[in-house]
Image (cartoon, rainbow, N blue to C red):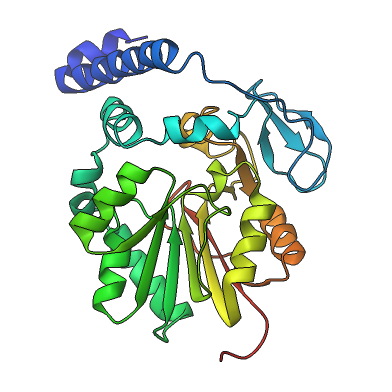
Length: 290
């Protein structure tokens, strides 16, 4: 609802009206295009903990054991290539959200500071050059920068058409498929930024990451990790976080510690944050580097 005071601020009023219209168009599109997405039922958390009711969103439950917010009605695995396809996800869905398409993401991600932040993070926690795998590599902009600095890079994307675009335009090796079911070599650095929350099986995802890492290797995981502690999780980004088409799990620091322990990884730090819904966990495989 637009309050009367907004008419005293025409620019603010226009922006609010635009956002309201965009949300309406977006919801209508989802109802039309993805209303038939096949879903399953999730009765427990990825850690096998039971789910309590979540008063803020009826599609989610809260794990009684680790605190993870669990999507009770996740899309089945076979629907993921359609949801994350080159044409739908990178163009239609991003445009309706007001985000850049894959073609505009390199400039966007450099401009908003995330690439510099990630590079600094890697320099602090994994300064030695080696083989790096990034699952869900977006436009490939981060791997492109790492490749220039001497890393041997491999990207992974769900969609074959997206993988081909990244490979052709960013000069990278990119393999298509749903991780962890992708053939990959060992690596010293494993990256997944804004990916784990989309995985149907976070434990299998991280177990495979641990398998790929050489002793002393580092995994840097960025995901929505609720660190607010009071009120609605993720505060002003609540609606973005609890997107029950894409986000299957939203984590807590307790959940990340549990996940790391079950995968045989050590927690290096849980104190890094890019921005709200861009919280990070830096993990390490025990042992000395080769």
